[in-house]
Amino acid sequence: MTILSMEDLAARLAPGDIVAGLDLGTTTIGLSLSDKGRRLATPRPVINRKKFSLDADILLAFAAREEVEAFIIGLPINMDGSQGPRAQATRAFVRNMEQKTPIPFAFWDERLSTVAAERALIEMDVSRRKRSERIDSAAASFILQGALDRLSSLARDASSET
Image (cartoon, rainbow, N blue to C red; front, side, top):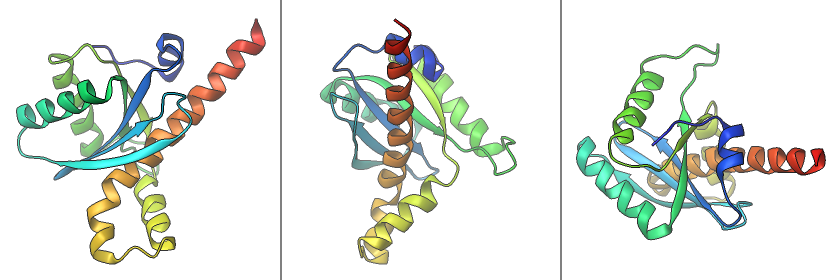
């Protein structure tokens, strides 16, 4: 497995390749999945974290079942641009996954993704209890949607250069 920049990921993906989004929390991993056209991110059920090896097995089974070709993982950067303990934990998770899969990972700045996800759920009149169950997957969808929009922009730029 490799860690790719968004530019390198855009060059590597083939048409129809599916990409998954991850929001790595301390107790859950939020999941989302792109369509084959990579236009829309759709939330999927969260993974309740237990220990790394079990979490990785569940994540890789999901990837195999859904034919995932790449992961976009939210990188929790502080508002001032610095990286704290959560960003270090996310990078460590990806390094550990490197031993288990050839599927590439790309980091995506996840600042305010949970806030945006919560606002969207509130606007949809989702109850507080249900919001807590859905927030991580909704955040993963915001992360993935931002990355999909960037990948689309990179593809448009590449096609206009030829």
